[in-house]
Image (cartoon, rainbow, N blue to C red):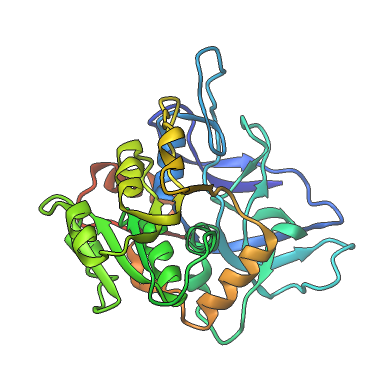
Length: 332
């Protein structure tokens, strides 16, 4: 079957190509996309050739992980339904995660349309909501995973490092749970999207000693600290802020240079929670929170590009200009 896709043919190259996809099987659906949401961090890491798969960094001796169809999240309308699929109909609007592709380093990808997608990677969307709000559902779920992994009671303190998409949704989730949240970032425009005092605070790490501010704001210590940027120094700084029995949640990509001393965490009996990927129950919960307005997605979208103009989208993301955050590819 012929489709069109965003392809990374080699490191630091972006193309829009016609590709081959497997013919849909009895358990597959074919989805014609309206929008796909770029995961700036994960896909950017693939584009630079840093990952061999998922959260696995490339190591010496590994094959070059190209060509690849990047991405893992999109929305569209069902065009065809396999004979074994009985609960989704043609014409329904759905979210799709990974889809099947041919001739690539990996046989799955995200930014592809029409998209041959197994039923267990499909979520039906509520008819009352804007489908675009769900286009980044996997990444929204990563933030939800960060914000729900550790126990926290209303009024307790949480610090989230990173004002990107995962940091935003982690901070939103913790605020929804009743925590007093400090979001640490380096971009005033991004921080402004979360700030809502007195329980949603922000700090620009470019100008302010954020650990000192956190100590002043939370003299009884921080119950949950979340690193979304992949920084060992950030994790170590969070450890110094933790209350006894606190939790550090790690969601960043540390590459092959991740060296965190575990012994110091014993002081204060601090737990280290590692989050990764997606799970069915978390996706279901995230979808409901987006539908009910507790997790905000549309306000985080800053740019739209035609899918055929994906190179220009990536030029913007890589240059980090024009206050870029959420980037959508629009499909005809």
